[in-house]
Length: 406
Image (cartoon, rainbow, N blue to C red):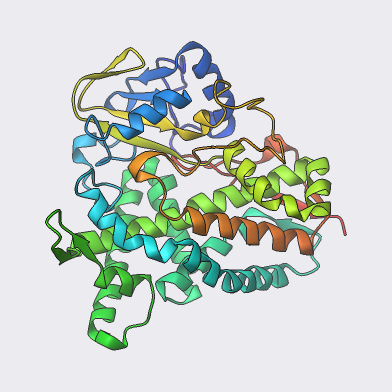
């Protein structure tokens, strides 16, 4: 990773793509919530960072002023970013007609039907770990399960896993720093899904019942009630964003869960002894270790919480910061396993809220439950300060060395 100029003041010179942010993001955001809830920077052609819950909610819901057509803040000029990730990069009214046909694939019913398959995947991955006493919870487990799930949903071989991981890293991580990596990864993803769509089209009525076929046959409904097939760009964009959203956010959260339990033996012991707490615990993990910070494009001069922001620039909505806002959560910097009042926004807010939230919750619960059944006693094998965190819009531990205690 290229060396970056050090941050002079996070309020006026923030750099969310730095190793310092990756390692200490929660602490940096806590400081900004107190003294500068709308931070700014001259990096990235000028950008802003919103850290308070109510300000993030209001900004996310104002899609006219804060457009979703650009969702990343990096070294590329905002007006040069042309990546089509429908429906995420569409604003209302175009957004809804492309999003709605995708929802049934991620409904509670569809997720429940998939659960036994995910359980079998988790058990098989744990069989591969076996009786090893040292294991990397991220590389050997957390980063593998979501990839297998998405490969299954796309109807492709699990052998595609390494490519999916490389593409996700190329677009969301390394590619945020090195634009050539991002462009190459994006091109490969688009070519892959274009070929998959062509294969399903050739199969006609014999095409398998998978996400690629679902997107191929999806139709967007117009305001007058008529329907139309997705365009080629919409099809590829939808599959692209489903791959990104279905893999990195889930593996980042699952890795954070294993890291937390490996460093908090009381929480580990309680969750093992009271498995009925798992659904509540999952929500607290999502709140406390929210991985995603998303961007919006500012369409015209405006203000956020009284702070002027300039049209043509981008603004980052720090969902992890919203989830630790003391104005909204009691004891926000404490992880409370049985927290009851927990309306977090780990999955976003507004019309662009994550459409795969049911799937993510199920994967996290299955993944963690299977791990705890197999390994009820474990600890982090290194000092927590040695755990590397990913750089980019999705934050999670890149490696979680674990010692199995038997």
